[in-house]
Image 1 (cartoon, rainbow, N blue to C red):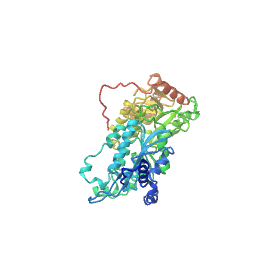
Image 2: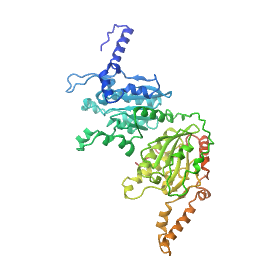
Image 3: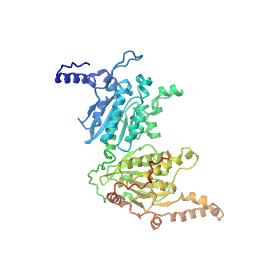
Image 4: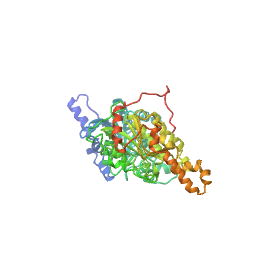
Length: 526
């Protein structure tokens, strides 16, 4: 639209606002109707549900690709170029937010839309504020991308996302189609949420997969929440609707500072630091062979109602959760005996390593609750490159600079004990054991069978002798001996766990002084 140079300020403003109005939701009833037909909200409506009321300030609302004459496939006008961008507040704190618009070329990423999203990342980095991505669209816009004059430039979006990692919290809400570019955005985010039955993600959608490989599949089988949340762990949480996704994003951010240099967001709590949960005395079965649920242990230690689990449906043999202790955000990492005895496999190591890195990046102290029989063994375990996946878990403990406390609840066996920060493995601020703890180099039965099989097989009653040897060895693994050898600081009453950890985190400095050699960087095992 042309604006006459002689027009007054009021006339010019009126003309601009008229043009802006033509790009808003109310001026696009057919597009909004199509979205509603898919059961979807517009990007602006989604942002309004996510952020504090009336705080969204849009950036780039007037951006729009114009049709190009003479092109083989002339483009239509693209309101906001398919992505709504701006700043807002969540629970009073500033955030950057951008939302793809599926009604504009299927939410694909155009030239101006790409420039807008990249500007949002730069703003988030410069201001040191979290970023929330509402993703519902394809990758690069085919209509404008099959041209080397344009595409050869690439852009710095992924460079900036990599730079943002560990500096600002990044959240990706997958609210629909999310193949290609949006999946790569999400892959660099700290927290990814999918809506079950609605969201899909992956590197390529079914049409491109068929064209490239001949494989025929549908969206859900390829990249639905049952795959990407529950089986692959690419996303952290699957929810039933968009409002739950927005609530999850708000809750996730509530545990984190605005950036890595800001203090943790402390909250008032009326949950006494010296509260001793009687149920903790009875949670661990007398028999080491019986399973139990570690979640009530975490709940019994943390502030009431403060536990927020990350990846609850993936790698269930390990639990990773934000919580608060005395109002202070912390991270819990715990073995889960209910699932495969809490043994560590490749997925559990990946889950745990990423969680440690995230907590360390944003300054959350770590609590490790240990009941680990070791690592998976056998050819199937080796095929998952567990040797390197397990090393990644160890690598992250070795790089963490936040305070950490370990508590051996029951089993602390083998290298798994090291990988869960047991004893003096990673210089914990405190290493405790419950009376039920058993600590040794490998499973007791396995040790007897490997080292003493010849001894018990030569006895008059081999099985009786084997059992006797097992019981004798088990007695040597008791928690009292761990304390006598000063491998742990103390054997504590489970009811005092909460008080002891709160006290330690109040005393410990928020960061340890760097003690690495003068290298430029470490090389991750994977």
